[in-house]
Length: 101
Image (cartoon, rainbow, N blue to C red; front, side, top):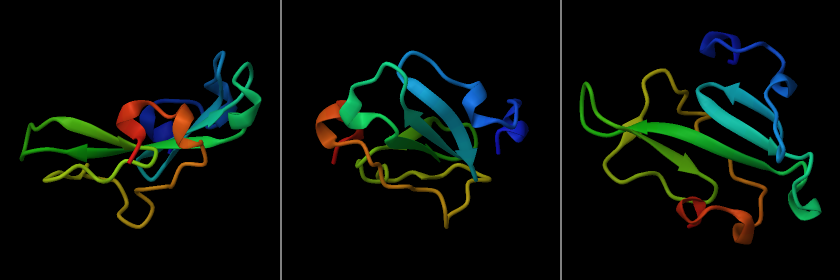
């Protein structure tokens, strides 16, 4: 969770112009859109799941939105396989290109 990542326990403590809150669930980062964001995506969630390429000191790759799991990569150690991925509620047209399927 957030405290294990060195953050406060309250997801609303991490916010910004377009972000209402940021939570960490079993290694996955869930970003809830809000504040000054377009009304169509207010309260919608985009999640980021960490994967590792290679072995040992590989590179972390983030799966987000509707994108498929990275080919040849494994979930980062400590990320729960049962809750690693959460489907986004943000419409595709608002997602960054790397977060689309």
